[in-house]
Each structure stands twice: as C-alpha cells, then as structure tokens.
Amino acid sequence: MFEVILFLIPSSLIIIGALIVIFAKNPVHNAMGLVMTLVSIAIIYITLNATFVAMVQMLVYAGAVMTLFLFVIMMIGVDKKEQSKESIKGQTFLVSGVFLILISTLVYVAISSEFRWDLWFDAVEFTVEGTPQLIAGTLFTSWIFPFEIISILLIVATAAAIALAYDTQRKKEDA
Image (cartoon, rainbow, N blue to C red; front, top):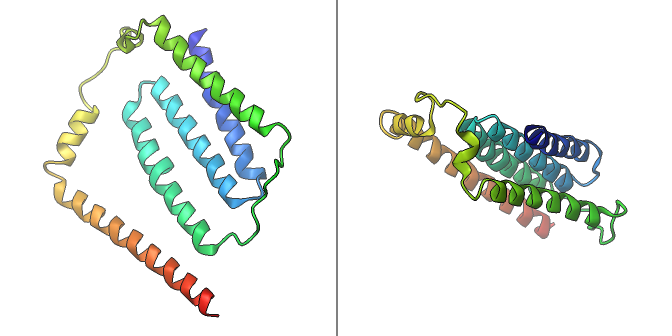
C-alpha cells in the first residue's frame, strides 16, 4: 500500500504540472509547471532506487535546462502587466493542500521508520557498479579535463547570454 502512495502522489503531480505547462497563459507559469513535472519525475526515480538518475534529473533538467528556459523568457521579455488577482479560484488552497500532503507523507515516512532511512532499503540488493561514488571517481580522475572544459563552456555561454540580454535592454531604453 505504501508503494502505491509513493507512486500516486508524484504521478499526480506530474499530470498537474503537465497540465500547467499546456494551459497556463504566462510563460513563467509554464516554466514552473515544467519544473514541478521534472521534480516529480525525479521523486519517482528515487522510489525506484535510481538515485543517480534522480540527481542527474534534478541537476541537468530541473536545474540547468530550466535556468536556460527562464533566461530565454527574460530575454524575449514578458511585457504584459502581471496579474495581481487569482486566475484560478482557490489556487492558494490547492497549493497549500499539495504542500501539506507532501509534508505529511515525509513526516509519516520519518516517524514510521523511526528516522532510520536505511530500513526502507534493506530488502533491496545494491550492486557496486554504477554507484555515484564510482561514477564521480571516474569523472574526477580520468575525465577531469573534458569535465572542466564543459564547465568553462557553460560559464562563457551564461556570461554571453547575460551580455546579450543587457545589450538588448540598453537598446530598448535608448529607443
């Protein structure tokens, strides 16, 4: 029963986030719906004991890709005036309810396991290959040079995006 709950909550959040992506009129709300979808997928990966895939999901997709999406949204500009009233009736209540369900699930898991997280994974046999420690060991020893080249490339791309956004904004102000 507990496994079903651990699947139903994130899967329902995936569906809600996907509907927000499709039907929200504000691009920032679309991006936040996509973040909710990607984070919920990472939660499902964690329930499947695929922690490395979940962390990559969070870092690459929910982190880096969504940052780029938000940069693009800021660069193209959302020049509409922001709404100050709720467009969905009871959305504050809905968000509060979802947050309460997530927190209560976390508290239930913590209390029922007597705050020992390893009890949930006793029946699972872990293999040595593919663990984050081995992947990180390989990545930061024999693959350190390509890793650093990619990090420099990402920093240059971020600086260039900021410079382009600044230049575009300055030209708008001059006109």
